Length: 333
Image 1 (cartoon, helix red, strand yellow):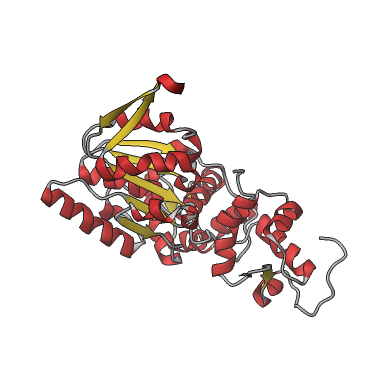
Image 2: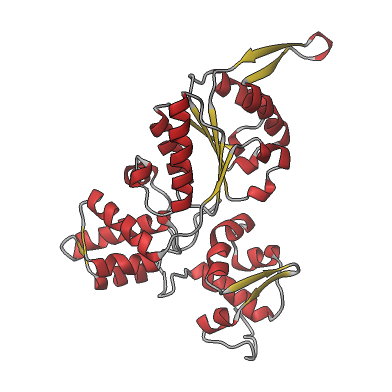
């Protein structure tokens, strides 16, 4: 998946440094954190393994962070992988057989698992055992291995792509939603302290307002504006510095990027429902990136509607480009 236009590629080391380490430090997603805290406390009291957990929602809301927090709260090690990296059952068998008792296995993009790998997980999740095939052909033999109790935490932006039998094996299923501006401002205040940059409330509020309801985007913007503040403004982020930095990143007053505006331009030019493939070809971006990264915000903010026969721009989408639905479509985008 390519990096969205107007966004910085994640710096994993910096990203990890800004992550909260405990549920009490996690801002927002109140229902999710409350339910997870209760489940963790109950498992610890009973001295049992935490149920398998499925976390869904748009990218950048904290699914990976919550997986690490759950491991920390349970006092367990965490092993990480991603669905696209598990090509065959053998890839998963080695990881499962090496887990320590009580460990957390985190699989990002779990919707990308091939069906044969997904089905291989069924017995591991339910009975803590796997079957390994030794050899090929008529001489092949099977060996059943018992696994130590573990918790599978899966993260997905596309819960609907998981099969019903697989989804039903997760005892805890939680969906993360986009953050409110006030919650993002709180997250940014904490991050600014960790980054050792001074910041006014007005500056942080402006960054929060233009961060698409996503903590990852907010922190990425803060790091880039921190660079600007350090070089040109005495390491201080005022409202004016935040405005300057966001303009340099190509993020407009509504939080839309250049690619957001190109998506809306595609729809307003067509004046009819447009399919995802056509949008992707027109704007030069991957279909999955448009659907997972851009559309949730455009839909939630009322710029775009999804219909059975395609996407259309709303009146607000037209207005953002200075158009009305009655205007003649431009000859070129």
